[in-house]
Image 1 (tube, rainbow, N blue to C red):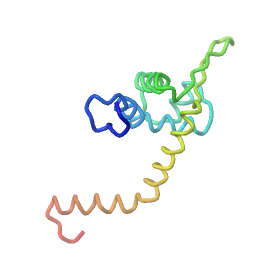
Image 2: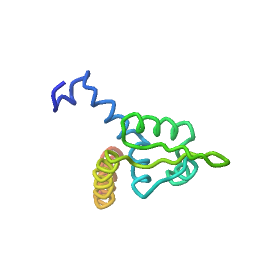
Image 3: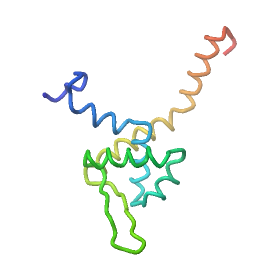
Length: 125
């Protein structure tokens, strides 16, 4: 595959894009960009994620080389997750996207409101 073939249905980059932009992938990367976390800490930090989806998301991101899973030989045993070098790089991009969304949220909310008003026949919005 050549670079730039992301629109091709067979492009392997699509899986990475799917993992990064999944409902929880971006939020997990943002949480881990703030430091190393245990599973339970991540679950609390990323509000609304189920244990199953957090485990799946962490597995995907680990498989893609974006996070590091470290088992600590303590009693009781526990695991810590952190960003890899590759994860820190993409984490900066993801944080930039999150910053853009938060900055432009008033405009986005206004556009949504205007769309709803047009759909509902309200011409005052």
